[in-house]
Length: 301
Image 1 (cartoon, rainbow, N blue to C red):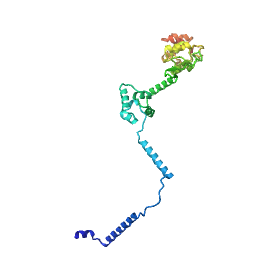
Image 2 (cartoon, one colour):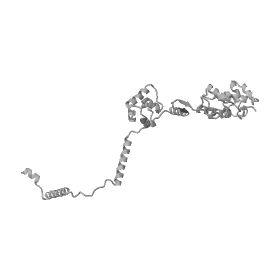
Image 3 (tube, rainbow, N blue to C red):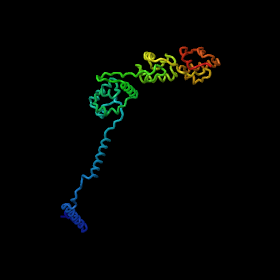
Image 4 (tube, helix red, strand yellow):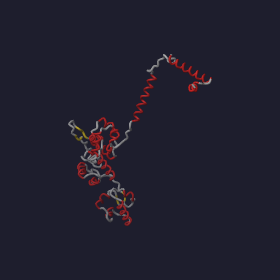
């Protein structure tokens, strides 16, 4: 009895506390049983505000999913690894084809070459090719090839056919435009621009042989140009007095380099004044083969 007595023997205040606790429990249980807190009011789930709230949650979920996707940065497709290829959506066989191709020390230099080697689908190529990053010289070369291809016409059988050349509008090489020069086979954008630029530097072609001095212009192509264009009018070149010309100004002569310029000034100091321009031939090691070109820009007065 003493065992039970220790557990059930309370003073008056403790018994009152237990009594009130039991009453509270009974009241709460009654409220739950009789559903006092329930309400007959129905909540409308198709309201405009609620639908807008759900749409906002859906959009936030989509943004979060997009942010979780691995971002693609510009890359060189020649160095795609197994892991990178899998991220891009390539199959193992497509990745293996690229790796096998690279083992031959070859490179893909365009998205079409990439598709030809890997055999990826058009849809995947269109998805990943905007991120391809090739070296600068490759991009420049591809642009040049695109320009050349744009000048060609492809007939229905798939055979390329060159577009007709424009007619030459002048026979004077000193009046020929870039388009006139491009009417010659073998002359493209670069060469035609280079010829015009060198002609400007010379203040016009005075001798036919000057055309062969254009850098990168092969002799057979230059011969074609001279067979279609002639020097019909000599250019007007303002000659400078050899006795008063300054050092920097003489260096602008397209046929005089620094060492020759020094020799000319030393000779001028020795003789005080050149009486005739032909005295240049008296200078030691003077390039006689360039004499007729040099004197196009000089005079002794």
